[in-house]
Amino acid sequence: MTRAPLPTTPSADMFSFGILAIEVITGHVPAPKQRYKRLGTIEHASLKKLCQKLIDESPRARPASTETLHVLDDIKTKAEYTRCPSKRRVKRKIDGGVHLLYT
Image (tube, rainbow, N blue to C red):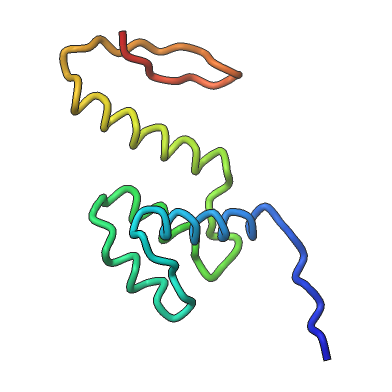
């Protein structure tokens, strides 16, 4: 007997994105029983926390794509600022959102 595919939902997409993110960050495909073990190898605290939320068992606990993008943007901004502290930060509106840019 063939099992019917589960419906595609934004929450399921975010779970898949979380699995892909873990693979990209760690360099290993996280098998179902090794997902949380792989999370333990992620050293960046914010990325680890985001990945934990993305692969949460409860679909309602997973962040939406907009929240995920904001977290990733914050991580990127902090990394850029750490590398280039002498640059001036400027808030700009781009595509309906506010982004921090460096000039």
